[in-house]
Length: 554
Image (cartoon, rainbow, N blue to C red; front, side, top):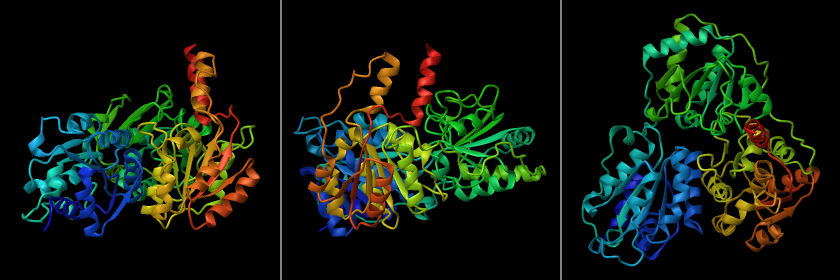
């Protein structure tokens, strides 16, 4: 006999979901039984937060929707960090929780939790299932909401008794036309009159610049962007979340701008007189703490989410549109005006990366540069927040267009890289996967070393270890004059920890040995940890901009 869990699995699969992640509890065991009966791939993590980060990375690298489940009680609140990241980074997830049994609602049953009140600020929508008959409808609706407009996480709360209860109703999934045909994203087209004004602005610009954000990734508009830049010669910078939307070997690419970009790319971006922001919220890091665009520059902002238009920037023109549709239509408008393109003004021949050496050995910049040289073109890099993603943004070159580098820029959360790299290796096994993170974040997620071995994930994790929350020490030194506010850690033999979980593990102390070990790790059949002890005073590229901002305030 079918149960509510069987119907839920069937509905989610019918709506296009292929990957499931989670951590079981007593209330969700019927869900796990249904997943097994259906023969779907479900990855059990060792914490709910890690399961959420796994689903997040899977959705980013596959371009689809991933599902993460958590039991009620203390389990479900641990999803919040991952949902916060997915919401701010526009990642389509469905978060499934087991709610209080219908008959116990309001009676303080064990582990009762007010899921909808708790999750509402961190999701696009929260849907409560009132009875089994509505399971197919609401499951399909959750997927549709997750992928439509600005994508994001959607919470689906199912009373635990419905998960186990017999179900005799229909199995048909009521999909709308777009979802049934897999036609997402829906292409919202820009206003034609506003677009004509933007075209005239670009034609008269002396130093136009296009800044592409994560919205170009979500739109899958890689071809449209490459075609646009080839035809009109406008240089392209990206935010960190937009990194790789244009191959960084392309002569029109200047690489990442803002706090996570290179000094050379930012110097160019500050000279632009017209800046076209496409698919970016233009947050504090993307604008270099407000330094971009430069003084006197005119801005145009294009975003699929109307609420983001003009929130931070003061654009002369704000276009509510999908990134791919806007690039297509703007190209047509420029063609109709007979424009041949912008004269070269940046002198670039590919992304401007910071020099890898910073006078400290081993230099994290040099190590990340070695990844570019030794790894295949389609390598997937997963970096933690804090300094790791700064080194990835400023020193790793994406040689092909597409999603190549991700980090939790929406929340700035450490502890993301290890579980996210594992999920990337499982969802995209044909790609080489590199994780990069510090010891502070690694300690928050190191239990997932076992998950990688159990699931057969093949990846290399580069652990940059300074025995401290290194960024906090640097910040406290500059802003408060005391580098000792945050305690250093006791030294940990992370190679022994990794080997205890079944990983191969190597410790390296300089760039030459790193390259030799990396070649061995890339050829390994299982997961490998490369442990790199760092000096305590090593600074990431974005710290220079932070220091300048603090000096300006002084």
